[in-house]
Amino acid sequence: MSVDRGLPAAEMFGLDGRVAIVTGASSGLGVAVAETLASAGARVAVVARRRERLAEIAARVDGLAVTCDLSDLDQVGDIVPQVIDGLGPPEIVVNAAGTMFTEERAESEPIDAIRSTMSLNLMAPLVLAQSVFPHMRDVGRGSVINISSISGRVGIPGIPQASYAASKAGLSGLTTELAVQWARHSIRVNTVAPGFFRSEITEPLYTAERAAEYLRRNTPLPMQGTAQDIVGAVLWLAGDAGAYVTGQTIVVDGGWTAR
Ligand SMILES: NC(=O)c1ccc[n+]([C@@H]2O[C@H](COP(=O)([O-])OP(=O)(O)OC[C@H]3O[C@@H](n4cnc5c(N)ncnc54)[C@H](OP(=O)(O)O)[C@@H]3O)[C@@H](O)[C@H]2O)c1
Image (cartoon, rainbow, N blue to C red; front, side):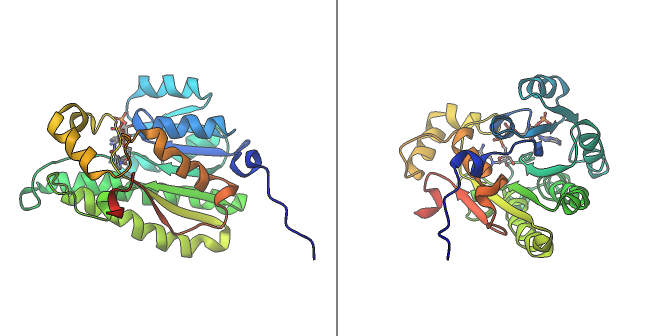
């Protein structure tokens, strides 16, 4: 019996020539993911609404900018044909676009805000996954990574977010279901659930002293989370290092949910 040898780290985490789609890549985590995947050798399509920002980031990662309002599900189907024309068939999709449309308490959330939250955070990742599926199947492998939140796991006292939490919890259900449906094509589907990290959405939490103290008190690790702290899990799941991982929700939260 031969003894298995460890793969070199560069090979396990390398993404040479693989085409990746990263949504929400005009700011925050999406930008960090696009840059890291590109530095691992991937050819990256960056997707969001802000055209100028996307053009700048696409130039930085030597990739492709695709403008799309993901909350309009009819537009989501236009992404993959553009990526195939510009870069080739996608093997990696990172659904990082997401937001909270309301901070009302649950009993007062407007129905339009609930609909928008579900469309952008939950339905767009499903529609994009549907649209990449035939291409991943033809290539013979794929990795879909949804970006959820600890709000999909636990309630966050003091920050009302019922529809946001429901949409993020929904991503974990979508993940397990797609994982078992698509495993036979070697298409893996996973979710990364970050805890709080500093970005455009959360900036007000870090600048208001009381809110910042709340985050410090509830995060066991003595550091402030940044997008860079989340990206490692995405890189692991994107490539061969994560080849035997599917259907999982990986929490990256500085210990918030471990308490
Ligand atoms: N920051 C945190 O503490 C935290 C914690 C847990 C989970 N998350 C999740 O992590 C992900 C990234 O968040 P972030 O903190 O990096 O936020 P961010 O900096 O605000 O980035 C959000 C991204 O989503 C895009 N986006 C928003 N609405 C869109 C739409 N309708 N169509 C297309 N793109 C849209 C934005 O681009 P455009 O405005 O250009 O469209 C932007 O690129 C989100 O899914 C968020 O829920 C964040």
